[in-house]
Picture 1 (tube, rainbow, N blue to C red):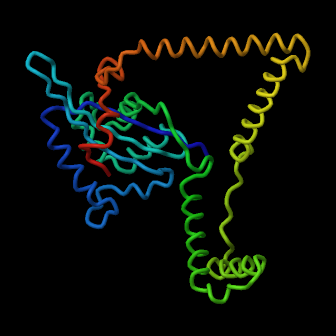
Picture 2 (tube, rainbow, N blue to C red):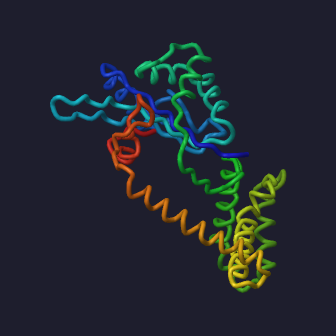
Picture 3 (spheres, one colour):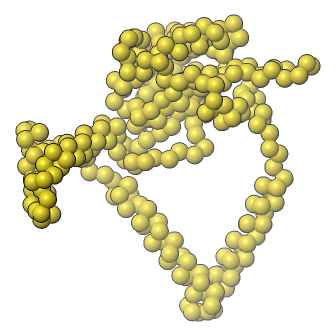
Length: 277
């Protein structure tokens, strides 16, 4: 299953800022739901991670327009963002409505309109790293659980396992897991071919292209290949020069908008002054 990012950015109503912070803070301080049952994100099987945080507004010098406070909702999920948003609204409508009734453009409690509102304000991610490609949250949980059983068994039986062969230790571990899981050791779902070997295929293709370019440049594969390799090298150099020229001309301004109504203060405030759950 494909993993996807979600980054919903909404402007907070000025008179609702403290209301929102007061509502989110106790949830963030009780992430394991030991005191409150307002919402349990751990109950969402397709959710790897999520966070809500408030980005404070700017207070510029007199004569300048202040930038409003923003609410950022980040999530890493299995499957489609639309499906997760619909599930979130269906299972925890009170939470979603309490949060977004504090934001500009809140459409009301209608589930369809609320989902469309969140999706319209989803900025996605310019860069998204997946640590376990193709593996859903529950698969990762099972792997971690199995590893924990193996580590505990080896620690407890270390004195008995010392001196045994690798095959004997492996057999002992398997036998132990069979006692832990009488119905059978959980099987890990088969992964797509490209998920397992995509990086190796890409590296092999890259190496092949490199060999052809180098060999062609020195005339190892005939004049036509030499001509193409020369064009490729010249094209790469030209691309690098143009790219560097554009980088040098780019204006660096953190206040440039995501779009006309948003502020690019998200990354600047991402690790500070936030309310997180």
